[in-house]
Image (tube, rainbow, N blue to C red; front, side, top):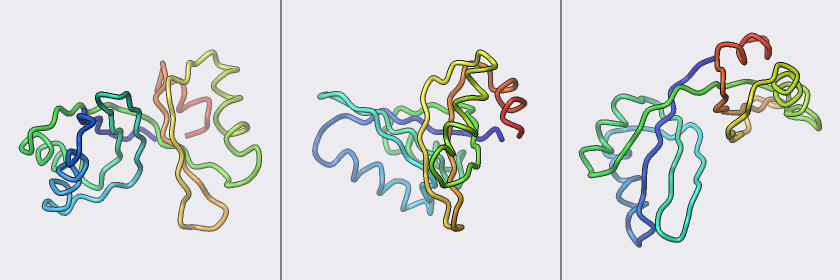
Length: 130
């Protein structure tokens, strides 16, 4: 299913992560999934939030640069080959490029989820059976 992801530019300096998390906490925003890509000077935090619009507003008010992106969230079995059979093979077979992804374990036993940024979200939803 299509979901909204928030990408936030964060300077790699002491206290910046704390400021970001304080802004979310002060507005009762929960991080549902998280991925960080970093360099020596900055990081990009990609997050699925409990309230995307409210989270973006809170982060912008706190002085962060943010971007909203449509990504896919796909449930899969939490077992060997779950990511391969549920995501990688169907996308490759359909010629869809997987730009990046991050996974998280579902609280329900035997389930996991993955957040995907792909070249063709509509086609990806179809080939993965969403």
